Amino acid sequence: MTGSLVIAGLGPGDDALVTPEVKSALEDASDIVGYIPYVARVPERAGLTKHATDNRVELDRARHALDMASTGRRVVVVSSGDPGVFAMASAVFEAVEAGPPDWRMLDIRVLPGITAMLAAAARAGAPLGHDFCAINLSDNLKPWSVIEHRLRLAVEADFAMAFYNPRSKARPEGFAKTLDILKACCADTRPVIFARAVSTPQEELRVVPLPDCRPEMADMRTMVIVGSSQTRIISRDGPPFVYTPRSAP
Amino acid sequence: MTGSLVIAGLGPGDDALVTPEVKSALEDASDIVGYIPYVARVPERAGLTKHATDNRVELDRARHALDMASTGRRVVVVSSGDPGVFAMASAVFEAVEAGPPDWRMLDIRVLPGITAMLAAAARAGAPLGHDFCAINLSDNLKPWSVIEHRLRLAVEADFAMAFYNPRSKARPEGFAKTLDILKACCADTRPVIFARAVSTPQEELRVVPLPDCRPEMADMRTMVIVGSSQTRIISRDGPPFVYTPRSAP
Image (cartoon, rainbow over all chains, first blue to last red; front, side, top):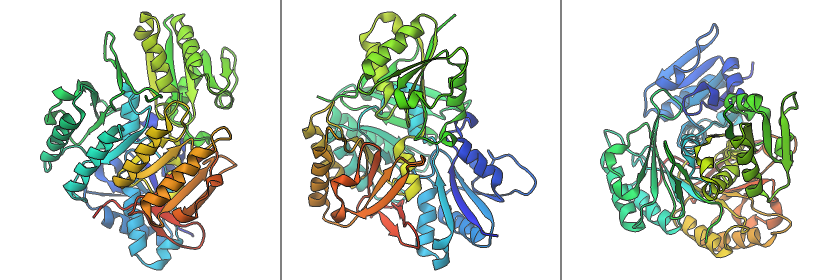
């Protein structure tokens, strides 16, 4: 039997956002590997072993998955959102590069998913309808100076910005600094979208002008999208539509 | 009967990448509106009217869809990929903002899809595993100077870059200029991924070091992803894995 390793994106939470390709890989798996709440989303069945681990052990998890695949198991590593966007795919390839040569010959496939910024943008309208960037605000794996440098250049490029991992209990300062930088550099009232737990029962959506944004509006389950200077708000009864026009002056 | 307008993403081509949410909206629609090849992907059935239009008439198409929704039809506007990323959602909201006030009160929803850069990245490995930007290289709706400005800042920020609409018969020069700028600014051999028609029978994937890239390697069906300075190549028998590590120095 030949083993395989699939790194699959479960989307933001609702099963209606899981692609048939991913669903079929989950049904065919012998082993599911991932962070506890994501593994919990996969239904139990005979012949399936689940290996749920805590956060922050991504490399160990990747090595364990590769090890099992190399013994002939059909392993699926699950990520929320898309596995290639601030999720498990890079960790797996880091482990492959540093690992034994035969790991390179494994059948390894990445199956895309609906990443959080696309789900959040869709709820608000189309804030990412023009050029944009995606930045992970966690400084666990990069120095804060790199994040700050990128923020300033992103404003100068007039990108809309999608922020992953904006704020956690262990890192309350970064997002406060981010807002300070944006308020100073942008000097306008562009909309900021705080989209929490999109497509789950806990979903919350707020659209706040940049000068009124406060750090505590975000937590680890929040996706933050900052408009470009061109982003528009269409007010109406109920939540406004937010979109960035296709054209730029 | 109350009308509705759904803007739905069909993903990059393979039906296994269409979310159940989108599939269900298509099954419930009275009218499908969109560019000819995307409308052709929706199966015919009794009670469904298809309105296929040519490219470059996005605003007319959006107005037509809104008009039908306001008369009580259940309209689905189809985009390839994700409708919010260089696709139909922004055009619809532009039409809403400029249109009659009652269009703002319509039930308008955007349903996310697998956008081309995520499908292409997944095929190559995880090149978008760290901070990145997405730029539409078409200068139909923005001056070339804006694109060039963004390219230079994106290199300075050390973003990986995903390029939509890199090159068409009507615009052969832009991508040539893009490659010249990148070769001059980056001065390294970072990998560039040319991913054509991902998830369709015409799929082709090439990984080329930046100095060896030539404009004719891309056409309108190609997604181009340029690595950051940190992007790695894992060579092996068969196509290499390309990934950007989670950490930055």
